Image (cartoon, rainbow over all chains, first blue to last red; front, side, top):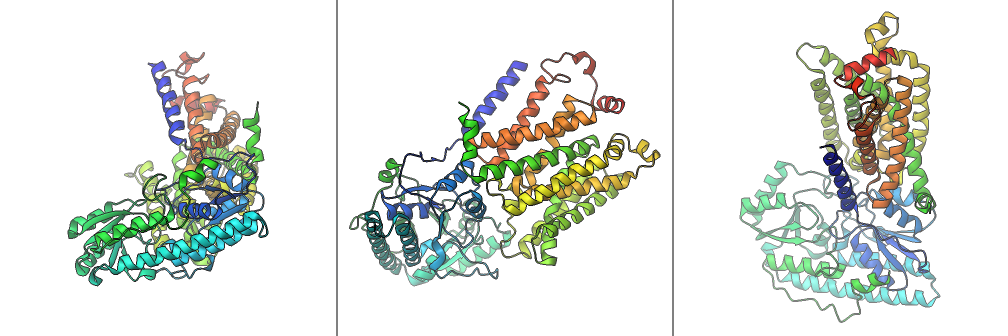
Length: 327
Length: 303
């Protein structure tokens, strides 16, 4: 009986340790390249696209996790302390990052990707800003210029590596511009009375501003805020009034509220849209650009538009696996 | 060979800062926890940790600042308010003390949540950080706060040791000796409020409760003598904080979570194998068997 209890405790302990395991890959010391740490998966991908093999890029978050609610782990602090450069989103998306960056120890370049973009103020809280700027592709291009510039300075503007990063930054900017025009073409095929994007949390305001589509969300900007039953009822009214053909769930947010709206209105529940994270490695959305393409495909199709695939390949774009094998 | 022990200290300032702050938290919590335990008021720590939230929010709304003295003052005030509320309710004939604690602190905590979601719009108060802490990025302010509060708690306990022990073991007897039992009680509650607020940033409002209750509970399985209990509780707190940090590094998990799980496992080990009341083997088992906590308290009084 007692041995059973002890065995049970031991098994629980082992299970707990195994469950807790997701070793952040703390890079070995023998890699001579400068270490760039990015917070969100979008920024990690951007840093990989810009840096190529010249810098070593590590991300803190993994696909599908929620940057509003992330809890940093010791591996992240260690990564921060080793890094030469940190790329963060800013606009209060990662509240947890401040302490981690400031108190990890050592000195490093900190790039706030959103520093040169025009933020959207939050609707009902004075002084607040919406952090989800990445779905405005031209704003994202502006951010990639800031990050690319900082990376060039990191490796030295006059070095061969600096030239490589400059070239890659130009390529990435061109790709983003092409993506921007493609999105405009896709969304233009949606009948104008159906151009409304209903989601669970308010992650698509920049998308709406950039591509003239009405965005409505049940939850506020941050997933931390809880929606009240009145919010859900208002949304049901709105979906009926606007005659929205579809409502969208998101990958990193609990779908129950949107499902409730879908059930009540008969609107199709579409998605899941990628909002605060890119897709998993090896999936159809394992880079930022592919993630946006997937989102636009789901939105265009669900709202009754005509979807034509985006040509990724006309620009050199590195694949996720290629860079991972190097680290 | 011992590189796994030494290496983390070379990984950056965060390790030193984290270890320092959790150790300070663990010491202050363990000492206060013993007195709460003896008074059968361990769960009051839970209440005080929660009512600090409305205190901080209210202080912020009134003063517009989140400086350490303001936060401490607000939390101490709501802490006292909650203590008075719990006392008043539990004196009523038809209200059980545990229910009184539950009623008062949940109502006040909920009021804090409402204030936070309606009146405080800009995200200067991070509820998530308040509840779970951020031991890897502890701010200078938080470390200074702990470096002030923990020694203060130790000094106060040392100064009022006799009053505290007498009123914890037998309030009636203490009163007859002329000890201001009520003042000691409210003083202890204020100290617990201040400690929980100072600990928020390091371990968060939820896990600080574990650091107050579990060391005292473990210590009581090892000794009935007050000074030994205090020593065991502090040892338990410091060991679980240190080992917990290492565990968090090995499995790369939340540090506060690992600290509390480690503390719980130490309690389980003492529960099973402890020399006095251990379930599995204990030399003096026949003595302790069948005697509940009441008997232990009587032993404590004698010892």
